[in-house]
Image (cartoon, rainbow, N blue to C red; front, side, top):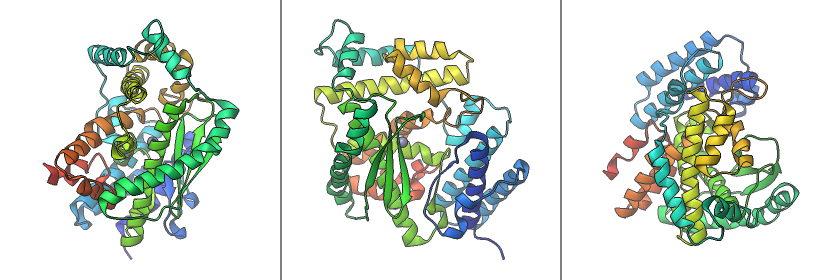
Length: 409
Ligand SMILES: [Zn+2]
């Protein structure tokens, strides 16, 4: 009997996940809430890269022939093609950083010109004009250190106050976004946990059953503003997955029960998470929020440039850190800590799974999610915007986004 394409997709995701776990220590399967028989945790990779790539390619052909819904078809093809690139990359095939990013995420890594960085520094300077400090660097340092927490006190904050804060953010999503959509979804909540030794600052693990575990990296330093930013970002991931599980339960489409990393899906997922503040209407333009927003753009852009320096231009880690300090106005400590996410290889010499991922956030927000959201807001179409985004999960890929929102143009 011929296997359904969605079943084959889930099986192959599991096998690619087992493969990436062998090579990098991390499975590209980020979450799963489907039937136990296809559980990707049980999947094995038999060591034959070519055979698995062949099965993925056949799946692309089958999807093209067998899936009639256009958005679902393009979504599945895009996701499967990304998985092929994951296999080729991590099995050692040589490809440029640009080819890698384009193959995984369907977008070109773009280096921001120094004149653009200058413009952004000018914006930061203007926003910080009335903040205390003798020059911009000192102003940013004082601002970042104000209420700064790390280590044990951050752990207490994460597992105490933040847990309550999350209930509030959940309520905000219900009262604003879901109310606008005129729809509701089960939300069994988010548990907060402090961790260390991770390359990221925060992570949403969707557990299925409408629950998430949000981890915060207490090696990093946060203040109340940056912490709030991470809470909104990670909570939006939780919300997006609530709707995904909801749609899976409703339709039984198996491919929705698995959440793979390093595909076109991530561009929209990170782009929406980085736009959660706008979704919730909490971007109210007070001086601290404006300061955080200006720094956000500058830091995301200079991190992208630093990643390109390391992965494409063969520049050293020292040069990348210097660049993020000089041009991104980061502390040396923060710039060094962020290296773990963007270097070509990890300390143990394996390919760094995260090195292309830095492209998803800012480009996902500025080239995909924010312009569409802003237009929907202008046109008084926010209800339809959120319904397209959350109720039709096939809209959530860089490969399908524009088509899914064609109605807006
Ligand atoms: Zn994220």
